[in-house]
Image 1 (cartoon, rainbow, N blue to C red):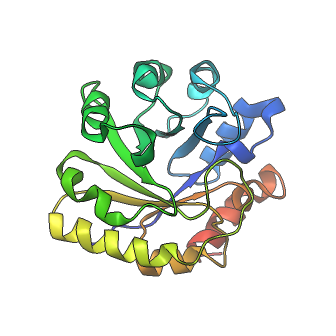
Image 2 (cartoon, rainbow, N blue to C red):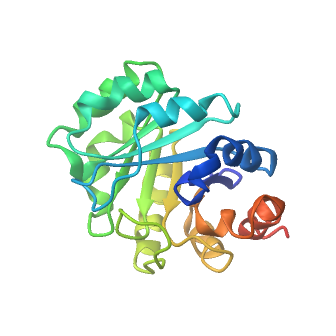
Length: 221
């Protein structure tokens, strides 16, 4: 059964000159999670920040930190992000040869483990690890940069994963990240998503607009 839709603003789109204030502002505006995009310039063609910045803003909110590690190799850095305050660590199916081992490493720290799929990666690659994940993240853009347009073909993947989750009987979140706007959010939700990551669509207009932007994504504005 699909859960209520929750919003996880990506702080990649925040004003980095006052990042702590931005995290506090989106928390107060109605964010359910804080989505922390970690990029290494190797697995994806961009560099964002690491565990030190994550830890620095952890104290600015009591919302769960949803840390999306777009890095390879990923295993050596999992403990650092746990120490920085991650509540969920999502790693990429494509980032290493031993997905099950990486997921077990995350869970050994007592936090939730997620797995992300790039647009070209089929849902079927997760058939063997459905018992090991707490969250599945569908990338609806190619990862590496904010502000890209939603890739419509990912809607079928979301539907497939929704069916796989329902068949598993497990409490697995289905998250979508990339090109989420007031126009594309309803499409992702209809396909089965129950968590939406949004950057530009949340942070546009400054702090006075954040609450309205979140409501627009949920269709409650």
